[in-house]
Amino acid sequence: MFSDPQKNIAELGIDNGMKVVDLGAGSGFYTLEAAKKVGPSGRVYAVEVQQDLLNKIKNSGALAGLHNIEIVWGNIEKLGGTKLREAIADRVILSNTLFMIAEADRDNLALETKRLLKTGGKLMIIDWTAGSPLSPKTLVPQMLAEGIFQKIGLKLEKSFTAGDHHYGVIFKKL
Image 1 (cartoon, rainbow, N blue to C red):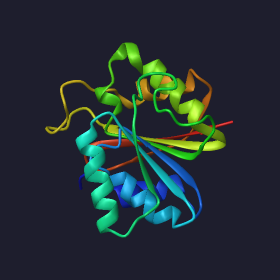
Image 2 (image 1 turned 45 degrees about the vertical axis):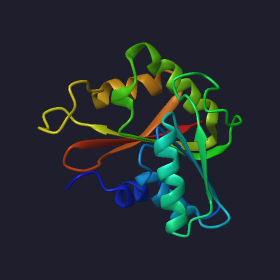
Image 3 (image 1 turned 90 degrees about the vertical axis):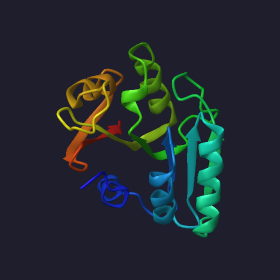
């Protein structure tokens, strides 16, 4: 099975009323699932650099009756680039995005993620595994991803299989 947002979000433990940030939200598959989980009292911030994708997320959310999504045009590769306030997020999602980040910008992405998380908040990374015929040319292996985020003080909580072609890891901000 390909990466299943509903199944993977269950691993992250999103509850009603939480604030979730989806970094590099893309087409919004994870944004929409998270918005269902947080309910009307919660909020999901879909951060994306491509305006057309943000418009797609906004339209998809409206069609699904989800009015708890805020689209944010921002740069996740720069500290403060999301324009969201510090410690806003109970949960952060980084799905199918890490492999697209230039090696020189990965530390900034990690620091921005840490800045967004509340103490006790969690980060879920879903990214491509090596050896899949569908994998992109540039990969960030799970061990490297773990090292990037552990280096800035996030604690690895668990790893899981996030589909036939993806790994999943969850970190906690202490």
